[in-house]
Image (cartoon, one colour):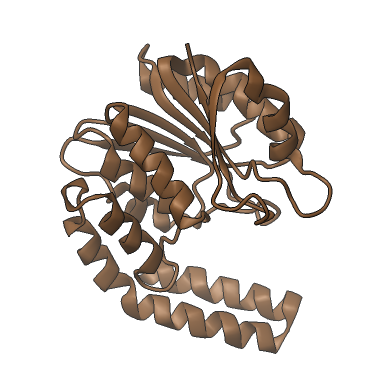
Length: 254
């Protein structure tokens, strides 16, 4: 709790300097609400297992405590991915690039096997969309159930040293799901795919978030997705083609 208070205090100072008092009051209100509900959500989270069904698990992630672990996703899309994973045998090994609030990491622990291994990579940097403060490390590790193991790498996914660390953790095992939701530039998402997709087993899945066509122009993930999808059996999970963001693309690895 002490680390949580320090984290929020530092955030408040930064918001005041950069955005002014009005933004500070907005952020302070949200932070106060989260502080109040954080212990409740942490306790409640332990009882929300995959046995409750995917609908209830997803509802918990989206609703508990005003965005404490709310995924940066559209509900129907992330639910569609989870249903796909459940249908194609629960994954035993997941690599996630982009952790942020931890919402998708939480959901993956509820759809994976009881002894699954998770490797989540995120670089804490204010210039990135995502990242998470150090105090959340133990909180995210508490998502694990039964014999699951969660490895959190606070590192640059584009660095070959990070890839080396991932391979060391996997110890020769292949990955069932690679979820790419980190650097959204064309160069960044392409590098994540090129570095980590060789780790995915035959029959496994590479999933990209934010493949949707923006309302104007294009962006890195959308551009790379259009370039690569036809090289594989693939599926697009998009609630509304006109929504202008989000969308999950699946590549089925042979």
